[in-house]
Image (tube, rainbow, N blue to C red; front, side):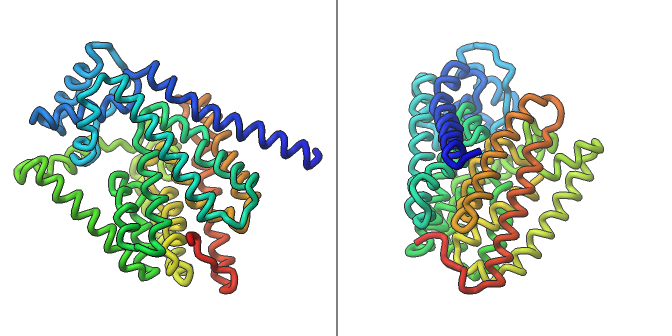
Length: 384
């Protein structure tokens, strides 16, 4: 295949991914009752009316009110912190379709803004076509588009994290505060904190700590002292290691043998391996952005609870990899979209293609970290 033909084929694939992302709001508005956005609206309504936020019955009743009695088989418990429910309060006062439309517009702007920051600040050494191709394959990947169709909050969290990475160089505390939004998704942050500690990024960690304090204080303020522990208790009761369309590597092994014990054992093993790798690569982790990229991919690989739409965050480690290995990074990004299609067709069979690609991305990023660790002259910062 000639280089020109390959370029044209790549352009068609990337254009298709972007087009798929842009049409997801139409799908979400058509199938409002099947979106996760309804659960955010219901939680906000419960909080505003002083009901039991972390009671399954109250959540189902509030969901029915939001939908106006329209039946739905898509029932997902709200397990976010109270501050997330509070953030949706203005939207919960609107018509659900109008609120979802506004939310999706902001979400698309968030993805676009984050992509622009990565292109201009993280990948300035790449040509414009290469930057566009990579960002189309990552930020507009098929699993990321699915998250938009569900009305998930990932696009906004992703934008905040990318903004935090860029700000870490000049205002590390502010950058850390933005990165702390990952506390809403614990499956993404654990080894990020470890990487920052090994890299002695104390001011970034200080910003994350401020975010954690904000979550704790807002929980007490919104729930009261007597019900402050309702959130973690409810999460523990609802936590399902056999999640729908999961891309978790530990869960893949656990479901092969039908054992949650295996899932947890593999998860703990991968976390331990991740900590060891980060310690070995600690010379690189003084750059907060590198610490974020490595910590994020290792956390995602070890997490026992990771859904397909969380793949949007793979944009960060893949962009880090693409600075010196654009071809492999692009190939892995495109493989993730292909794997999503394969696993979607295979449902309800356990997803296998996406966990395999996720493991491949982690291996490629770790290998690149090892090469940089052996070659001090090749250690540029990720953000400028």
